[in-house]
Length: 281
Length: 279
Image 1 (spheres, chains in turn cyan, purple):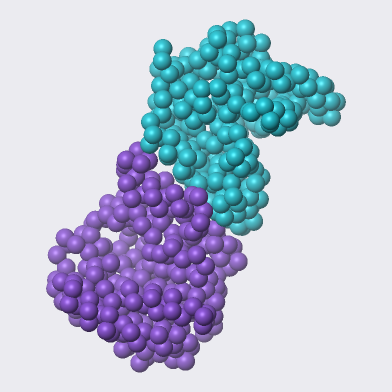
Image 2: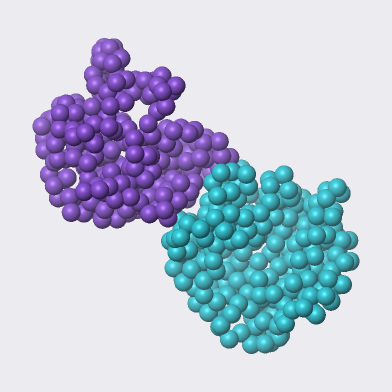
């Protein structure tokens, strides 16, 4: 099946505001996806680090979709693949995924803070419960992704320290709420400041992270980025199923990271000595 | 009574996002402001250019607050004065006002593109307004001239459907839902709009700016020239000046000293325009 592309208006919307909401994009798969989500968590004890989710702190599994054949195949889905190639080019990299039971609020932050000349990193977020503005929906600050702008810079780096200094409760910061239903896809630039407020203690969401392919001259940057996965105690970036079930098309999006994660196992060994449990986000 | 300043947090919010909402700031004056608003319009035929407002096009009176002593005194109100001084300094300029019956939607625009000298609008809506019934919508952070974000919005918002794939009313923005007595303040550079409003939406503004340094007086004169489209001989109405105490005069004197060219420009505008501008 041929990949579906974003139209020029959708691309411009994403470039301008730093996010895109695609209602119902994978609605026809959402029951299966939700079931797979539950299956993966159940097989890993139900929550974080092999223990049940108790609704007190976020539970995270990284990598996530790599643990189930059907979820792996989202990378091959012509709609998901089409959105990815439209934003990142035909040779984009899969940069792992996380599955989560969120608990309560998530304060303002971005997932990175890099100049536009750097590789574009994007997050595909799949929320598996209906969410509204005040029950945990993703909120984004449009335009906050523009590194180097006076506005975006004033909000701070990935820690959003500029927002914290305003002295305004996080939930009152002006933002756009992506009120999603299961089957919607929310896409945002890693630089985009985001948060959520008022959510419950069992909010199911998983992501697929993607990036533009790194040029040869920046492989050290890629390796450095990959090093952060040690916080999740991952020996390789990808799970075994992601690789073993990959066709040639998917493999194109895996090969650069697979060729450059040889240092991760040692970093993870060191992380296991220092950390009580893998990171929760 | 001493001016009541904004808090540092409010100033920082304004500087970051380009607007500030102050619910209930003038609630105790809301009823009187509405009466004064109606009185001014009634004294000018009820609508635009001496004719009744018919709900088909915006009716606009400039200079508006200047027409009524009660409205003039808003410039002396410690809450307005404190707000203005907090954002613009103690020597800010009053830059005129407009009173309006708005009709329907107002598309995305900004009131200026000032790189350094700050111009602000204090907007007083005299009817309860919600997001979809004509409340002011602003795009936070759109006020920074030279930003990739703000500059790209300038080109995108003129044709959002074709360029961004969304109707103007669907552009991501914040709606400042107001009740009479609330005050909305925004940087002239901030992109703003309103959608879904009725045909008789009452609102008036006070426009203010930082004092122009002496070496930039020509810029100020050029700015003042734009008031010719409203057929004004002077920027201020007579009552604004005649009822001014020394404190208020401080905020009037730079404009009064530099609007001598306006009458001739307005004379020419009357020859080329069928009616004074509606906005």
